Every structure is written in structure tokens, then in C-alpha cells.
Image (cartoon, rainbow over all chains, first blue to last red; front, side, top):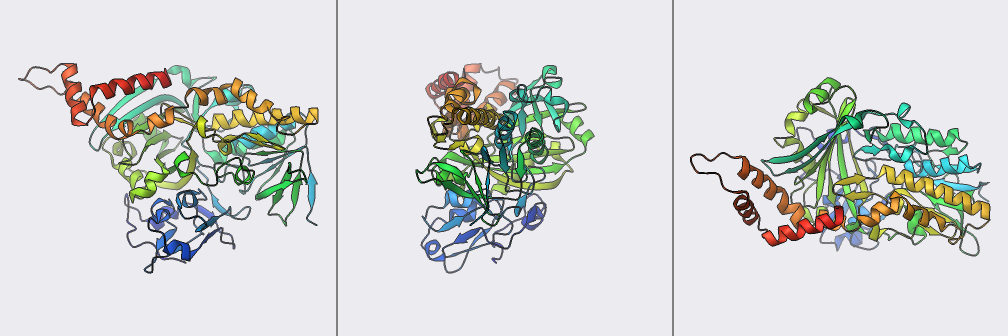
Length: 104
Length: 436
């Protein structure tokens, strides 16, 4: 489990936690995201940290990446912007689990 | 041995493409299973959104009498903005407010479930909460089914139709889509905001079940993209669409850009007092015609977002209609291949030619150069400000100084935004060639 990134800000009067609390997540027991910490430590861009709309990736003091999988939109942004082959493994959560959009 | 169930066709993904494919096959009397990873159709899907219904006319006659609609779009507004200005081309017509209608706002959890219901009503078997985890191939390498995460159960059929969305792991496994090509994708982030029905009608100048569709350029800072605002029955959908590589390089959070747009002086009064109902994000395949995958291989067809069928051409932003058109065509092509006993890529080739002959690929081919123009630096970074300054220059009354001529105002606005008149002319001609 990671802590929220320190620069996480309130936009538009609501916190990021309140924003994410509007989304229905049926969290499965299997993590559908895996990160290779060694590869991430050598990454200088850390594009996943900026681009993930659910803000699931947080840089650590030693240059690695901490991530959550629970509140994931399953959009695929993280692996698309990741420029290090093999750093990030991403599959769909198990059937019936994960995000459920009611107003998509 | 894992359990194996055998059908005439397996369709993966119960979005608009998959349900349309399953509907076509079921109507042809084929046994077809429709596999959906969400707990219900639409659970994983996000769009702007407007559905343009003409594609449904042949598939569900009088669809407008039963479709779960939020509002019928009668106003279409294209807006250019800077931080302090906005310039709109606003079009309204009665023609879109009565049958057979043009576009509607609807929510995907409602619309996708409705269309999947058409497929099951025709005899397709819907299996939800099930991920198709990979392709099953025969000794010759032909696709003959999918594996699932239901105790490893396999669904076998002579033809599989992959409608598994923008990340299509099936098309990737088949080698039809690149593993990850950020430059062909945009990220859409959307907020659905509660706003009373009456307030929407007053603020957006509509009545009853009429709705508005606003597309916005100039609201994404240095990131190529755009914004949107759509009215639903008692909510509005607002968001931005952002080029993935530039978003990643920008250091700007996507929700910050939505907050920017909501705070814009033109937009903020429309949304006053609204509260966040649901936040959402989804990728969009925006590469257009030139980035589409091969759409058929032995035993496999690809439709909808999995086939990069979203038309993101600036003036036109369409996707669900292309998913329906391609899915239904895929279902019919699969039926023809089954009848001929040839589900090889050759036997399935009529899919591609069918799409070329109708709007699905004809529109994409005609607008193939639109994405690069719409996402170009001048259109994104310079023209919104240039056009707003042009309008401000024309409409600001400067007494006692006499009015400047249009050409002088244009020249001044262009110079201020670092655009030469020659570039302006070139881009105008280019735009006319692409859209004209």
C-alpha cells in the first residue's frame, strides 16, 4: 500500500479521496498490476505518476515506485506511457471485480 | 481438463460492438456466447457521450421508442477558449428533436445493457463477470476459442470476435495490435455532475428532453486535446481528452485540467451548485485509419475500439456508432464464413470489404489526416487564442479611434499568436481538403 503522493491537491473544492469515493470499486483479492521495483528505480520520467487518472503510482524516496491496484479505472494509461519494457505488468482484474461505472 | 463449451461463435466484450456482433449472429440462427468481464454490460465503459443513432435504424427499427435516452441533442456548440475568452459556433435545430432524431446523450450502463438485451433476446447467451484471458489455437495456429478465468473453462468456436475494447489483449495476443503505442491514444477523464433537470434547461437554453453537446478547444494548456460538456437528464458530463505522451511529459494532473475547465468564466455559471456524482477515466484510440490493425486473421475478427474505430476528427467525435456498425458487420461476416465452412482470414475477408463500403471505414479513410491536423501545434496552441482575439478586435468598440478593418485585426491577432497569414491560409486549405 502506498501513501498518497505529497503534492496531491484539492481541485475544485474536493480532495482526491472524495473524488475517488464517488466511484464503485469491487476490489478483487488478486492485484492486477505488478511493478518491477528494480526497473522503476532506473526510470527518470516516471510517466505513470503524472498520467494515471486514479493517481495510483507514487515515487518513493529511493527512486522506486509504490502503487495501489484497488482503485483502478482499468484504463491502461500506466502501461501505455511506461517507457521501460517489463517494468509494469497489467492485466484485467478477475471477472466481476474492479471498477464499475454507473454513469460512464 | 478444463471444461469446454462449444458454440458457432464467441464474442468477447458486451459493449456496443460485441452486442451488435452477437445480435447479428443470433438473428442468423447461430449459437453465440457473449463474454463480458464486468458484472453487467457497460460496467467498464466510459464515453463522452453522445450516441448517433442512424446506425441503429436497420438493426433495431424505431429504436428511439425504447432506447434508454437521457436527452436528445438539439444544440451542438463548438467553442474555442483562452483563460479569459471564448468564441462559440452554436447550432440548434428542431430537426434533431423529433423522430428519427440525430444524437442522444445516454449512460453506458443503460445503453450497453439495452443493446446486450437485444442480443440475448435474439438468442445469444450472455456470460458476465468473466474475463477472456487468452486465445485458444489449434495445431495450425488458427484461433478456435478463448480461455476464461472461470476455473479455466474454455469457449470454443470456429470464429472469435474480439470486441474487448481499446486495450484489446486478444488483438494484441494475435499480433494485430501493438502492445502499447501511447501516441495513438488519448486519455479521457470525465466528471458526471448532479444538476437539477430544470436548472439544466434554463442554463443551457433547452426544453423538456432536449440536450446540448459542447466541444471545446483551447482548454488543455500545452497538452494536445480538447474538452467536452454534455447534458444528461439531471446530470451533466464534463471532461477533457488528452494526448497520452504529452500528458505524461507535462507534469499536470488530468483532474486539474477538468478543474480548470469547470472554473472557466464561460463554463462556471453553467455548473454553479453542481456536485460530483461520479469520476471516470478511459482510453480512446485516436490514431485513425492509418493506425488501424488488421481486422481479420484465421478464426478471429476485431471490432469496435479493439479495432481503433473511434472517429476523433475534431469536428466529428464519434465512437459508439462505429462500434455498432463494425460489430454488426463482423457478426454478419462470421455468419457468411460459417455458412461457407471457411473461417480462415480469407473466408472472413468480406468483413473488411463490407466496412470499406459503408460509413465505418469510408469515414475513417476520408478523414485519415484529420487527427494530425486537429492535434497539431497551431490548431491546439495558437488558433483558439487567435480567433478569440480576432473576435475581440472586431467587436470591441474603440471610439473615438475609427474601427480597424478585418484584415488589420486579423493580421494583428495572427502576429500576436506567432502565426503568419500564409500559415493561416495553408491550414485553411488543409482543413478544407480534409473536412470539405
